[in-house]
Image (cartoon, rainbow, N blue to C red; front, top):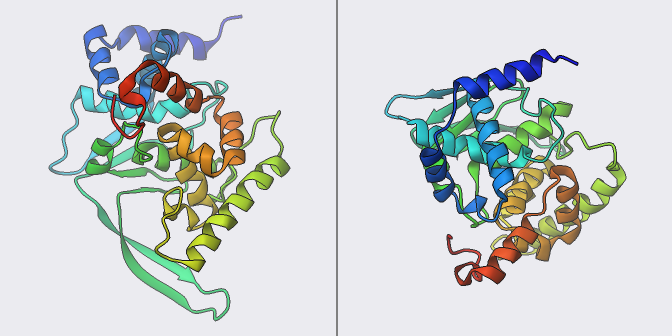
Amino acid sequence: MWSYRAWRRRRLLARFPIGTALWQQVIDSLPLLDGLEPEALDRLRDHCVLFLHAKRLTCLPTVTLDTFARLRLAAQAQLPLLELPDLDWYGGFHELVIYPDDFASPQKHRDPDSGVVHEWDAEHSGEAWLQGPVILALPGIEQSGGWEGYNLIIHELAHKLDMLNGDANGLPPLHRDMRIADWAEAMQPAYDALNAQLDADPDAETPIDPYAAEDPAEFFAVTSEYFFTAPDLLHDAFPAVYRQLALFYRQDPLARLRHLQASHPEYRDPKEPG
């Protein structure tokens, strides 16, 4: 049966091919992609073309992104979607705005006990707005791509996945073979344990970034970062969370990392780039 969507996809891929040398340069710059099968890397390349055609990258003054930098960003944006059903998972926004540096973001919080509203400015390297753009600071983009437990792009786009159900609350649309009860039984105790550790000692060495304790939405975004960039740390700390994210993203980065560690001596310390 003829499909306009499939025809348009083939047309875009034919019109905007990525050269082999350039794509290899992108792959070589992203240790995060090490261990992916050639077929998966080919699909990722196609996803990058479609992503860059569908989304507008708006660079503020002093920011310049060449084709390599745009592809590098797109590859990280599309990695979480690589094995998901062919749905419009990033359909809730059309623009990524690139700032030259971290930016001040007005914050507001209402104390549920007193009713007092607190307002302040906080330095952020990224934001995802409900029914709005994704904002990314250039230094955070450039620092992403390794196995260090940090990826600004994956973090902010995880918020966009979360927002497919409305306001970000740590619960993205689950697949039919997943249960909300199982998700909650994995996420809530881990979130509570992280908060309890920080309540006991605000300077505690937490197993994952303590920013995950801010609220359930940040917990999902941070654990998504760790799922792809430090899966061993996430699995060691919260194995049930890792299992739910593996079901959601349909990937197993921990198995890929362990294979790399077994095959390549430089990967035996996952914090060292490949």
